Image (cartoon, rainbow, N blue to C red; front, side, top):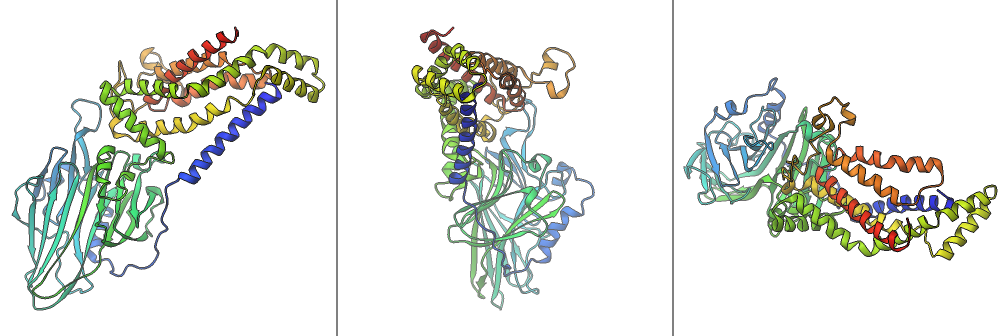
Length: 555
């Protein structure tokens, strides 16, 4: 590679980095700063017991056995099923009926909410707090009575009641829509002889799995809209000291890659939020509303919503019409302005073709068509450079001891042949955000999870499962045991490099020769849908480049 080519290469790398940094700076989601002031109402022994429940479990309990220990109120709406534990009114069993754990036909449905002390414990509950220690309030051991509704469905809300024996009646009116959103109304009726003051609270407790704790391209952990600003904290950054926040409206959640549980507040609801780690890999998120003064003979009520379900992008967009920025529960990343439109284009093509793999291939062809004019100029320039390469080598041989003269002669040749050495940078710069955005879509979009293609591809969001050791029936070290599609991708990249001008510098030539191999092994761990997209993109690029080379008389 001559000096000008090397400069072009370095320029491309530098400009690419600048684009990434600029997008990260200007399009990064806004973050809120934690509020460190003390929360007015101190935690009761009830909340401490909830935290201790995770700490004192030496062995994880069986989910089925745990569910059989208490009276329960069944839930069913087509999108989810499960039950509410009547002791403490705890939402601790939610199964997502439309999604399975694995691609196996007999795989059970995904269980999002699970009881305390189990391996993947994740539950929500509501309650009341008071600064008056003598006020008898319901707690986690309180058994509530069902007075209306035998099963919670979109058509049949339920009413639960508990009386404290001192003139106070507490009620829950719970409803659910046809998807994943519960509405929970807390009511307290004061028929005692005294005025009281109570504070409503809600609590989410989650034991993070190993997958949740791994740092990756998708955010997992605390996600919230606090006073209209997005706040994200990964599980590994949540400690036992905790953090306090305040918000009016918005929502707070524990989020996984494809699912999440969230408390959703009314726009005028003021809440104090506390987030902390309560045991190894167990995290607690709770909120406290404003104190309610309930005079004798009067009733007070407060309503919040609980989301326990899947990150279905179109559904969350629909909810976002009434819940501020609810679509941001999906981690679209820095390239939000590309990632989300890419998803909708892929989804439209999927609805059209009926297969997500073919949708990805058609999407690759469409992108190549859009980039055709820019790529055309780049390939024309590269063809001219390949055509004059013998002249460049002759110049290098003529002025091998005079680098300045060599550079002047090379630039004069470029000027005469109307060649711009940096012309190949623009397509590269454009494709960087395209690459990351499409990768993000394939990783975050639940709609692509377990989506099959043809042949052995049963899940486009996972790496290619047909590795060398499987189809060749030979032992291969795990580091080199890659799938068929990454091999095909590596071959297309190798063939593509043969169409480009060969670097004259031997070290640079070796580096470029190794690039297909390096990228092949790197892509082996990516979603196979992305590898399929990039393979077809390479093929279309080669066809376009070969046509232009033929037009310019390049062999």
